[in-house]
Length: 60
Image (cartoon, rainbow, N blue to C red; front, side):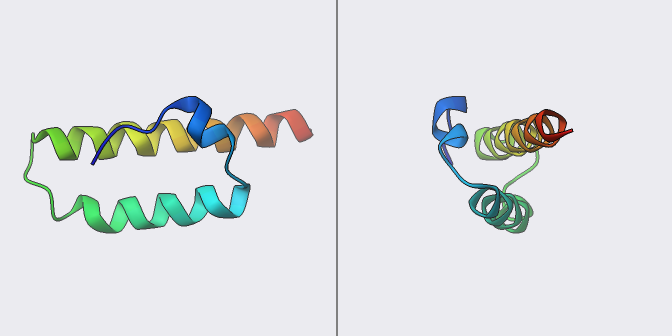
């Protein structure tokens, strides 16, 4: 799994981000602990969560 850029993630809709978050969460368990794939997945999850939170804050 590669790390998705912030620009790539910003182009996605909220529904697409939530779907991607769920899919990455599902495959995360298949990666060995400490592997590059696991670290990349965790980075993607953090970035997706950050973008979703920013969008929520900008609406308020």
